[in-house]
Image 1 (tube, rainbow, N blue to C red):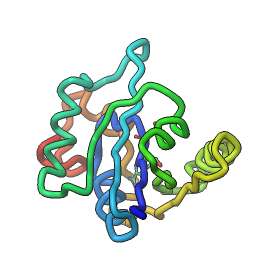
Image 2: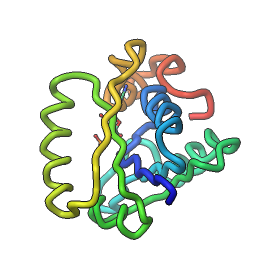
Image 3: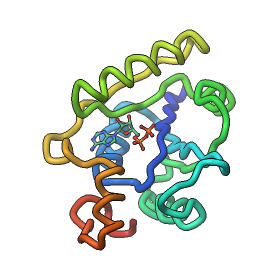
Image 4: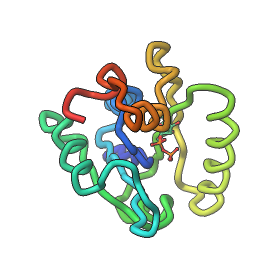
Length: 150
Ligand code: ADP
């Protein structure tokens, strides 16, 4: 049976830190679905219609990785896609507090769903989508924080 993981997030934008988590996840899972949580009522900084094809193109040579938008409970999205794992990244204790709470709730919603955490690679530990947005807003060069295509 294939090990399918969902990597859920806002990815606004998709950073080198996210790319690293997916790349490393491929040594654990047969398939990874990058699931972009998208709620049309919630405003994103980077337009979703432009973002989706860019993230897809990052993995054009990796058929094990697919990219989808979703607007429902992550546990429900995972169930529909026959994924038994959620993949998440951890940078620090702040991430841990937040991730711990979400993982516990997801476990209650779907006891068959395991959340697997990968600790960030040190060189990406300080990268966050919110910092990239802030830099971009004020015209700073963000090329060292996001993949070229993004
Ligand atoms: P969310 O809005 O759900 O927090 P994000 O797009 O910010 O979504 O992040 C998705 C996942 O990627 C989260 O588990 C987050 O902790 C992880 N992540 C974000 N940046 C990094 C990074 N630089 N290194 C490792 N993991 C990261």
